[in-house]
Length: 265
Image 1: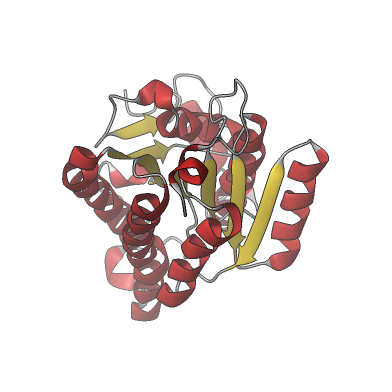
Image 2: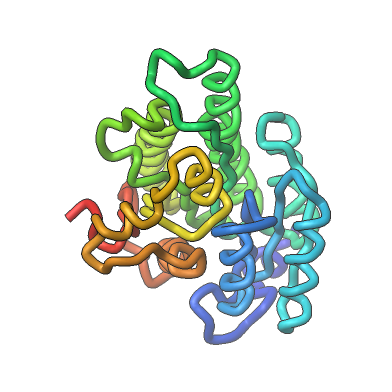
């Protein structure tokens, strides 16, 4: 790849992410799908990945229908080789990788720490933690290979910021994501690769809806304990990720940003 192809902007404009190529995991629904739409609106070309092709295809078509550029690849985050391949597919498709949003995750039913089945713990580890580690390493390599500098955002959770007796394994994996984020920021900052995380609070996604089936009234209780007295829409979470990936946050790295309506205030 020649220098001109590396430095050219694939989608010039004035959006927050204009001229950038973005990788988004968990892009078939919820926050990831909202990020796909938003990042494209803000000028990025997006590579979407998730396990369900039907969902990915629908989101990609929606982005294209709005005038954006989107491609997708099916990927099971529990498969490290598939994660690495999906990241490389971004470079193969668009010729570069500028920014990445590691959003994909899985859930298990609420349970006390001593009642979490070992297989569920292992699943959470593989998808919610190990896949992030694999993705960061692959994304750093892809950024180095193409544009040299860039930004990565990992999706954590406010449930990682304190003890989580209802979702102990989930909270532990997300807290480890925070540690990976900070370590990656320190490691790759000298070469101009920023790494941050967002920690969403109560958000209207299928994940919260699933937990609601096990804990009736959960959303109402979460909203009552939030100063803004409501949950977030997925796009509101995606907006925070977009800012952290953009050049407007050029001096921000190593942070875990709560996006929780003040719930942790």
